[in-house]
Length: 498
Ligand code: AHR
Image: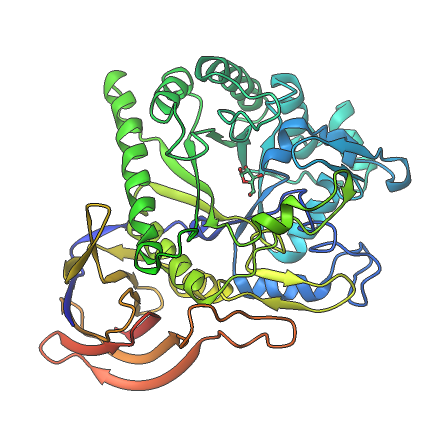
């Protein structure tokens, strides 16, 4: 099979905001307890955080982490997680039917984030609470001192404000499963009033309004339009969430999942621009795709967990090689939409539908999906080039899906061009002709994530079953052209010096 991909330096989509490589830590299952935090673990630091996990988080390269939920946040009292640990209350947690010990809260997480070198994207509870508590949390985190709340933070060991810049106005408020779910107009009003107070307190913050929980929600579209109509001048982003699955074991269809992600993004952009047009405004609401991933492997195991457990193994998907290909193509989709998608979070970071897995008291390892993520976060920096693709396609539910999914990123500073490419064909190699206009380039490194079996996984005892293989080369373009062969069902990173 043959395909042709053309890039010109003069045609770009836009500059990639590195925050598209964000991640997510929710008080859910073993993400916090047994994930980032395990005070009895041999690698635990003085604050109880696992050093082995911290190292993998740094290697993953995520620059921003959403916290503390997710569904969890909609019933959460942030004050419960502050102050002396032995005085913190144990609470029933209604989103996931567990007990929350509150051993970790905002002070602890801010300390962890500093060590991990990540920015915090903080969500506020607009389910059971409202504008006052949201404003209070901004004050606790960002006000320098001299007020009861900011002095409470200082007394809790943080003299300097956390300086949290990005705030999510609730989580999936359209979902009937959400604690304190709302109708579009109810959420729009509370989000506006919370936004007002939060920005009055700290005008430097950026706000993310809740979009639909996914594009198949019955109120999708109407929800975004109503929320943005009300909050347009107060917010900077609208959120998108989506999880993908291969429940009917249809591999060609599953490998095309990023087509649905792309459609979702373009639909939400259209709604944002419709509201802007209606308001005669040139403001562009940007997108925060702050929950995305593959999620389905753990459904049955999670359903069997007894209620009111503490940090049980919920949502522990063990990812396979097929998932790595799909996650790789989600990342190229985010890069190709970087003019509007400014933030995105793979959900989640550790154990819970996550690129990093741990065993309590044991090891920490990289799941298959870790690799395309880490490679994208490391090399997907710069400007996305606008692709011209000539490629055979296959049909998925009426969509013509190209066998090649690719993104080209030009990094002028590092003098590099990187092409991320997934060959979706199950059994055919793809001969790819790359045409570079106005770019003198030499291919110097090829990184391949490949495997014979779509079912291959990484485990504690076999952690590198699916792992990148790097090959050095020196292949200059001739007359702006270079041909490469991409193995069937493979994820590839092609690094050029320019
Ligand atoms: O990431 C797991 C859950 O998925 C989150 O808590 C929620 O926001 C979404 O439904």
